Length: 121
Ligand code: 5GP
Image 1: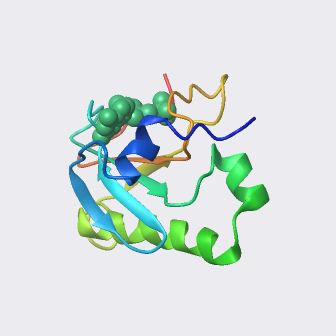
Image 2: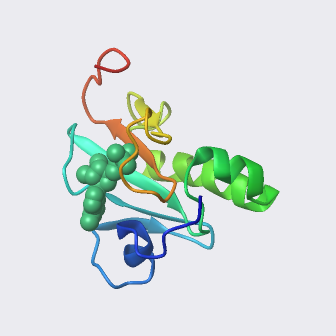
């Protein structure tokens, strides 16, 4: 499967579509989900062109992997939902068709600010 340069998150990364930015560094961009499912619903995406988590794990560099994981933690701290700044959160990545992934650029959802509930519905 080839990376779709015109997916919505690619357009956000290129600045062609606005987003409500939370944080950005060399490796990741984080912004609020347009259709929040919990009180806090942030997205964290790598800047590299990776379709999903499997693609990322197979092809990303160690620095990109570290950057994404640390980025999730940084954003969680900024939003005061990490276990040391708040009460915790759920990080979730939908992967592929059965995983319910709609946007084909890897993204982690961070849900928090309230009790998130049991796993998936
Ligand atoms: P997925 O189902 O692929 O895991 O999640 C895609 C997420 O992207 C959804 O939660 C959806 O609300 C969000 N989304 C789709 N289009 C946009 C957009 O243009 N801006 C933002 N901020 N989020 C979007």
